[in-house]
Length: 124
Image 1 (tube, one colour):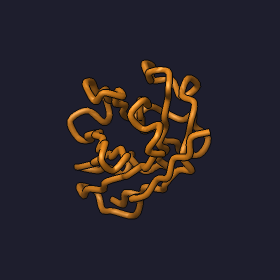
Image 2 (cartoon, rainbow, N blue to C red):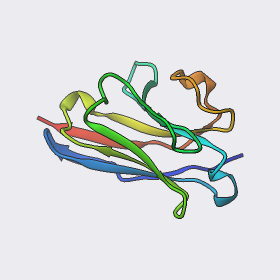
Image 3 (cartoon, one colour):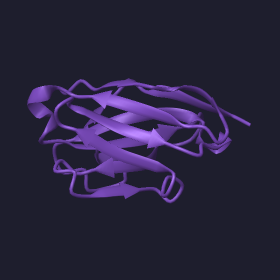
């Protein structure tokens, strides 16, 4: 089992920024693809961004493209999601995910490990 610990959520005004962090165990971090998903009540968990284990490639949802940036720090064993120009529609619980199998899909069903979630609320 891989424990993921998220932090950084909160309340921000529209147009503002937040940075989410997700720490993973040191002995596994380098081999894991990492991703961020989000979920609102009554909806399925949706893909936001992912980054390969080597950090060679990143992928974004259409809604995140141009506003969010996913990155990873191997010294800190942490993946980040920098969110800029936030909109009220970005309000959701954000989940960090990890996948030893490569993280090659945007489907939440294929990702193996999950964090506890952190609330992001964007006020208008």
